[in-house]
Picture 1 (cartoon, one colour):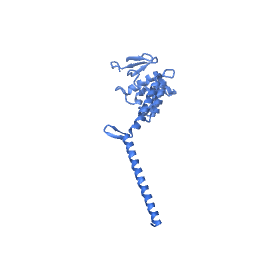
Picture 2: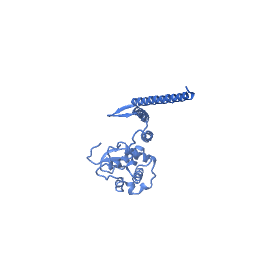
Picture 3: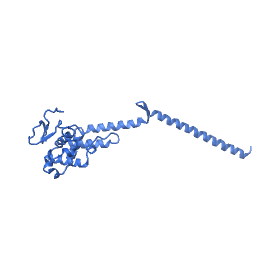
Length: 225
């Protein structure tokens, strides 16, 4: 047989085997991918979801870590606990919904007035918890039918002495006061639904509690929470 013809046949066979080899490898690759997809396929409700196992495991891992960190801060109290709580929530923001805060619900001007009134009512000589109690009274009023449903109409001179005498404009708002307002908004009321407070026992409403800085009151006849 002519040498040239032999070389052509050999070249043809080489190309043919190469093509068959690539096709075989591609098929194996497809089968492998399909196998991985089947392994990673799970049912959520009535719909198959692919690669859920890996994502679900990462979620569980993060939630477990977050729970451990939350338990570790349980011995802390007041402001220290709240700061640690905020740091943990922020750390896991990529995997959990962030809680609603005062910054989601009020304007900067409303918050500026709120911070100054709370600061003027409860100076830094008082505790974080006592600041929280005063902030809670303001938020309780927002939810009560007797009062307006916005901060500007609640924080007026007829209701708050620091506004009446202008003292609220003279105070410097501290980090404690801001944190106390944030805490009061995010967590359950610490005053059992109080709508009023004073420090000189002049109010004639139903007494609820005394926190060492103020007396707290409700309207007479209202059920305690």
